[in-house]
Length: 73
Image (cartoon, rainbow, N blue to C red; front, side, top):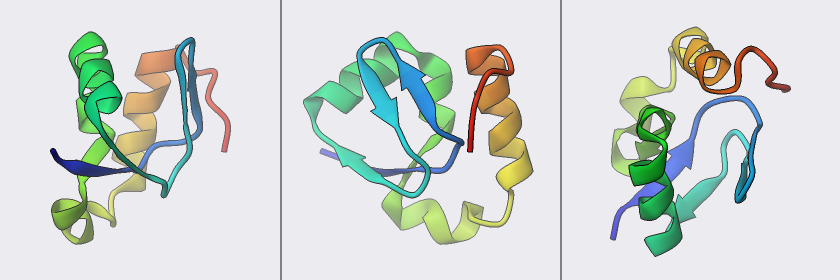
């Protein structure tokens, strides 16, 4: 089972709330990634996080795409 860190802005899905910088893991997270494929671009495996940490603008644009520009900090 992978452990992920969420790097986007706050994302409130009907079944789950994601907050930037929070670590997530478990079967429920894996199911959400399958249901929302773009979510896999915002949940970064913890071991890869140091390489990706620098590009917040890119991830914020993905969150905007997911929620239609209605995301919050």
